[in-house]
Image (cartoon, rainbow, N blue to C red; front, top):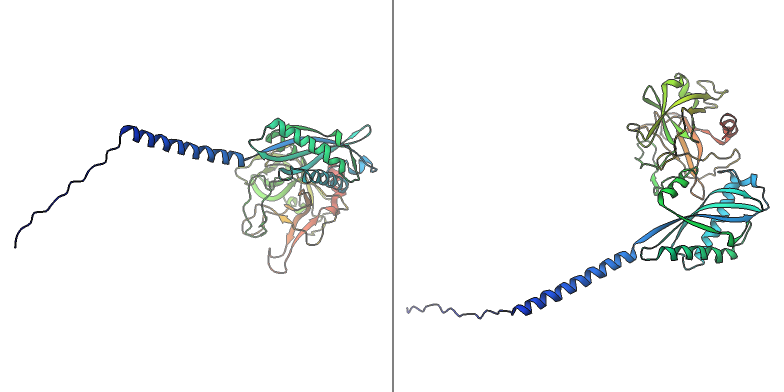
Length: 375
């Protein structure tokens, strides 16, 4: 067999001129820069910025101011709902329908010729919008669209004034209103036994009552200096000097603590009976309202919670509700304002079928609370 040597064919190497390589790199950089620019513009344009306003609006009504001037009263809620609906409809009939988030009445004040509603207004606009233009458009919408508002009450659209405020100021206004909270999706946390952990500020009125530093009962903050709890919590442990109240979602560490100045147990409570199972505890000094700690609303004595209303009970119990006695049972109204419906009193074999928990009805003892606290 004849040997044939391998034939290696030479390949011609392609060498680009330096100026061609430079041109390719330059074009690639331009394309990359354009892509980055478009991405940044898209992200920036689609980001929204929150605008918070403190707004006032004058109106007249045939109701006496005393009928709706008290926060959390039925008349206060009804008047607030009407005005908030008017503002919402004003935005919904304008080009700013998608930008409007919510309005919330925080208080009323009397004027010489009518009443002034004080309101928080929250909107969200594209971050590329000019802030001064946004302010003018918001005020213009209120001036124009409120002219079509159907009363009562009769509003004065030209009286509307708005002032831009920051998030800290907005939080402060909301924290000084009763019954406001950080919402979690309804349906989460519906269990009692074995419940669910909560976030800071989710139930800001919840307090822990501790005897010599150990948690004994729950309680509810109803103003800066008063807690409401169950009477049976103080059957054995009566000395206020040995009690402390802590606030926040954890007992240790707590957000803040206060001593107790005095304890008031309902005069008609007789242990071991469960009737009139209610008490009040005055704090040694007022608590400052924050996102994590502020008060619940107390319903009027004639407030009616309806069958089927969703209610929540909160406390520090683990696998059973020991230690949750005295804690709050709360429910929200149509404005998402939370009211104290009951106080955890007792139960027979906690959370067993056909063994419901028993709560002290707050509306039945509302006048007693006022007589002792002035609230």
